Image (cartoon, rainbow, N blue to C red; front, side, top):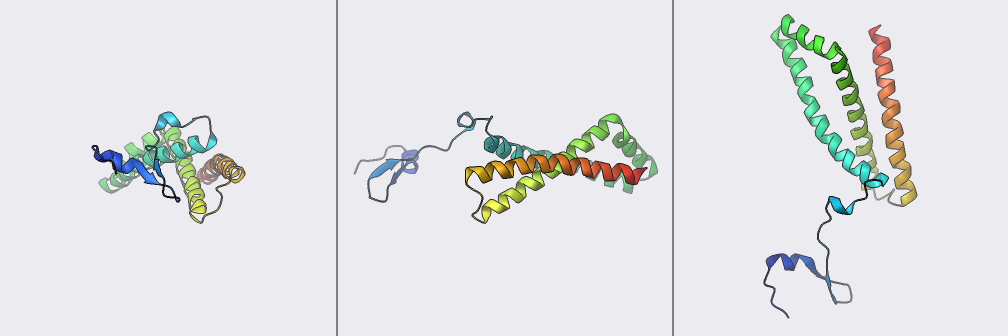
Length: 148
């Protein structure tokens, strides 16, 4: 047995089922991923949309606090959300919410032990993208029809 001088070495050495030693690779970093692959791009986008969705909840809290604070505060928030930039932001947040929800359902499907083969992975990835576009458009269409 060789003496391990660096404690990190112990985490990188393992044994195969036949007992022979093998050095395990370190956890991959962003340099390893090919961003042009659907699987990598959707995985990273799912994490980014989770963060954006969390930050987007600040706008919901702002709206609720303004509603509780009085008419003047609420009118200011409503003006912002009714402006061009507010509407674009809300539309983007709607797309983020749908993408993160659909990608989360995809992960739940994977948690059942299914969908790991490449054709199914690409199929569900495309379904997430198409579903995001369709559900965002449908959400805004329903919202605009009910607003008019």
